[in-house]
Image (cartoon, rainbow, N blue to C red):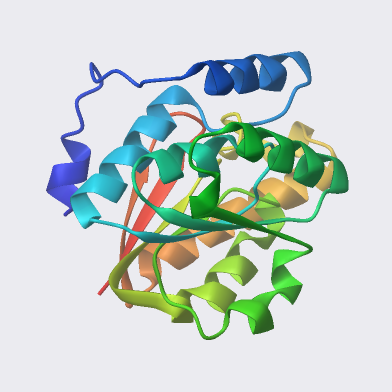
Length: 209
């Protein structure tokens, strides 16, 4: 699996309909962090190679990645805690041609497990509060199917994890240290095979053994 993912062709093109183009422009204008094109390409390849059908997304934002995954044939359940983002995501998803394949839960992902505890997923895509990644991972990975995949975005956080933390603010330094600790946790986790990709803003692909 790792060899297949590593061999992704960066020359691949992504197809964006008018709705997705408007969403990308909105994200730029309003500084909404959405998945970057090369990260989306990796996510798409993981979905295709692993034949993912049931997806849990933690962090909906404006619904951009959820729509892209649904267009690949996935059924997506996404969790978003920000009211403004949730409302915008609902608006965008309703304009898409795949809204029947996307469900959004409003609330903190750390408080929604009971709603989802009887479900099973092929893929968990984490793109939410960076400091909570380890908690998200530990809470929801029991819902993964055999050989399921966890994909975590923003693992290098604007390259901050590769910088000297002594000159950072206390809050940023704490966040960077949490991401570093989470990376170490993934690499040393014997239940998953993890590869970190320095594309986009850094992505970790963890495959359940």
